[in-house]
Length: 104
Image (cartoon, rainbow, N blue to C red; front, side):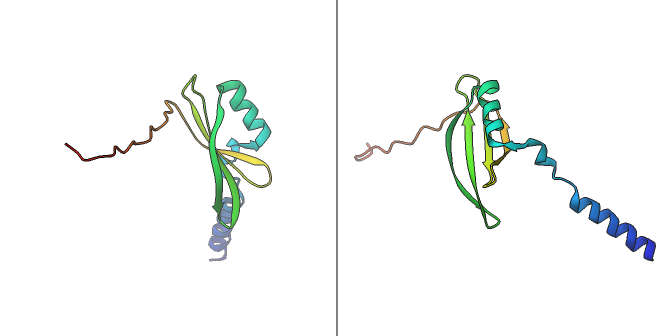
């Protein structure tokens, strides 16, 4: 019984202390931005504050009109940016124009 309990505790303890899988896509913001600009010709299009788990972070979307690529970053207060999404064929939505008057 003790051996099983010890093995289970050891297994869950190792899993809890393992680095998250997305940690490979995190780095200092300056390094991430430099890579986006030099390798993908991406520019900051929009962003905003995000409140997650009691902490505040900045969410940014970087895109390239040349290549159509996009990247979504989340930057924490400590200056670490994590890439949370990437893709291709980025497009801008055209706002819907409401026509005035009576329909015919």
